[in-house]
Image 1 (cartoon, rainbow, N blue to C red):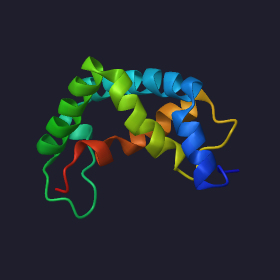
Image 2: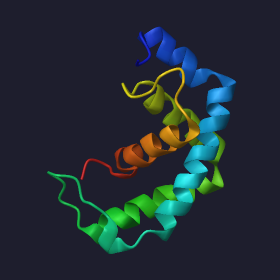
Image 3: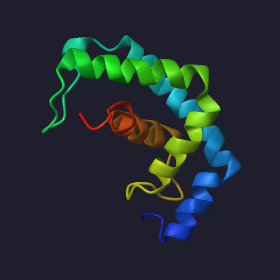
Image 4: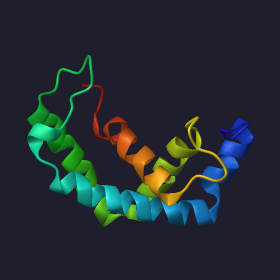
Length: 111
């Protein structure tokens, strides 16, 4: 069951154990993004970016996250906590999968 209210989502996003879990999850996603092949990148519907441009944006975000993971963890924690798939018993693997799925939202500037 998803987190039930915005107040609970906020509390989860700012909870220190959550921030620690998100920090590790984003660092793991960074490694996957840096290792991905350009041809494997799926450009979202409606985007004007090419696969190469999207990969570059994803890679640039990965580089920034790797050099300041705690700052980015705060951003990703709010996004993750607000997702309907997150529940109190969400596993680390589920959290990492969610963050990987949200990566483009942080990497793309409206393109």
